[in-house]
Amino acid sequence: MTKGDSTNVHFKELNKNEKVSKLSGLGAGKQETLVVWEKGHSNKIKLKAVRFNSVTCDLEVEGNIPESLIGKDILASFNLKGLNFFGKCKMNTQTKKKYYINFNDKLFKSERRANFRLLTYPHQRVYLHIKVAENLMQDSNLVSIRTKMSETGLFTNFLQLVAGSEATKLDGYVKFRVLDLSVTGAAIMMGELENDMFPCKENELKQMFLEFNGEIMSIPNARLLYKLNYLAPDMNTKLYKGGIEFLEIDTNLDEKLSKLINETLRSLESEFEDFLT
Image 1 (tube, helix red, strand yellow):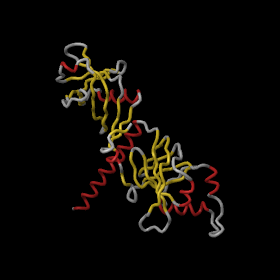
Image 2 (tube, rainbow, N blue to C red):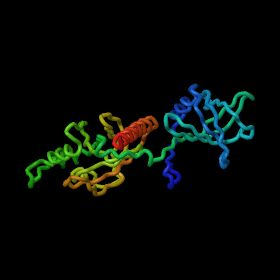
Image 3 (spheres, helix red, strand yellow):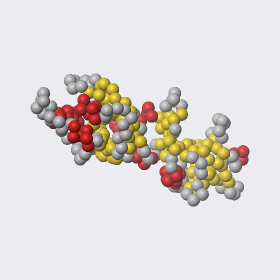
Image 4 (cartoon, helix red, strand yellow):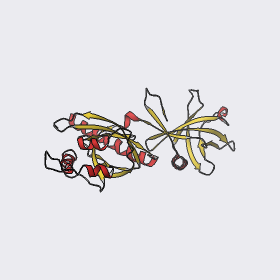
């Protein structure tokens, strides 16, 4: 669900388990702050989360709550571990001293996609390991009459050129250098042989593995969105750029990707400060 093209904000609905996990974290006794308001009204009210009841989906809160909100449908937002969440809920009370917000309705995680995009090439060693159809891999073993080399040999030489000699290899997977990365997808570098392995866009790529500076994580599903000619500096090899969209990313993997990207962005900021001194 995407709203607001001008700000490029993406809202992703959490499933039941994810919602309970986040609200439980919010009400874990750390007095986290949340903001509530009535739709269409500018008055925002800050409250403290006390505890969450996963059975009734009620979050006990403390603060100066106007009587006009009791029993009404309201909106709520909170920040947890650097991520922003928004929910449709209802303000309830059981006694005059205790207030509860019921979160039986939908809860969303939001992200500003532009803030999560990280340029990874050439300074970061980030790769996608993508499984290619067996018949395409077999076709790549055909011997080139002109070069007297197997296409696999040429392909391996190219991979070593863009990936480096220390490249990790996963059986049955082809390794692609990542040009830029976000929590929703990546752009990859391809040679002519790699480009031929994906004859058209919208290819479903299924499970793949993201290698981020030596750390490897599973991406459950993905698809190829586009392919373009790519001009790389200091390279005579004909290259292509492919756009990959990550699919079926749950909140835990989303948070892990966001953390890696944000930590790297902070590291790059530090390097820039060092450069200026």
